[in-house]
Image (cartoon, rainbow, N blue to C red):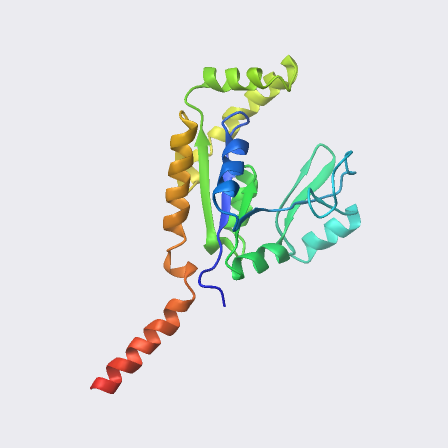
Length: 213
């Protein structure tokens, strides 16, 4: 048995708030943190590898997994299904490995309500301002004006659910936010439920105490 159970780390934010950058930094900090590999019914894009970027499955197989409760969370987005297979996540946390989820508030809610929800750590990243959020989206140079407009319109829907997360950080300084994330994760790993060896240790203490009396 591993010394600790892993965490399901949910990191959410509106697009442009720094989530992807911070997720990469967390993985560089601790290689026991891995990204959850989602399942999807869309076709692979050039360069994408099955089992590494996504698990590419048929619509029937995906729906069957949902029916059999094999998905921690799932959604239908732009004509395709996406979801997080439960089996690999369960195996990882029992092996003491943390799993990082880059999902929205709806997916976060599904995971918190799942059978593995007790091992969840949810964190929401807020931008310092809406003006700064737009500036970051525009500075990336990845989207046209219409796409940026859609992302900005969606951002408030995401932000409005900040109150349902365990921790909320204002990402006005990337380095400071990274350090705060590390502190949160390190302390949450010490929660009683994450330490399976505690039960046996307390039993040992009880046995020693009884031997003395």
